[in-house]
Figure 1 (cartoon, one colour):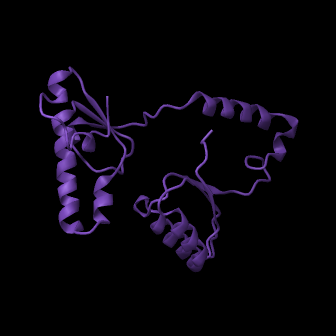
Figure 2 (cartoon, rainbow, N blue to C red; figure 1 turned 120 degrees about the vertical axis):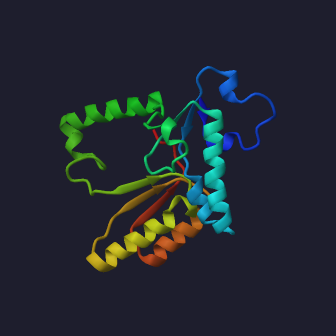
Figure 3 (cartoon, rainbow, N blue to C red; figure 1 turned 60 degrees about the vertical axis):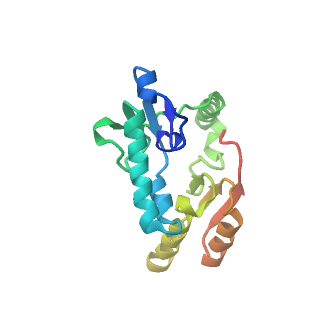
Length: 186
């Protein structure tokens, strides 16, 4: 199994390809580097080059490609599947089981996040990078507020180089975004 084969092999050492060394190579793709390249300087050259290079690497080094989302670019359509193959850590599952028990108990109705009286919120978990679409999300939320008087509460979890800028922009736009920084998912 090759994690992110589209870039794992950009600077591969000389020698036999993975498909010659192993009987069946599965590449798991989960990042849309083409979109990242569109936001970089010289995007008119860089983005198509990135698309071609990524496709070439997947075709050359994988028998099967599993994309974690249908929104990802096409690399080798005849080899592709869209599946969620991420593993889930034991503590995360334990937390879910304990939460289910709590919600079914007599005191479960007063749970701060999942109880019937809890305010609905949306959350983002990820690295705080403009290239992840945080700026577009903020513009859409601002548009929803201005055009439809729709205010959506967001909890933002994660750190990264654009954390402070994102926090400042959300305040400037008057968005209901609470930035918590990086925390353990479980």
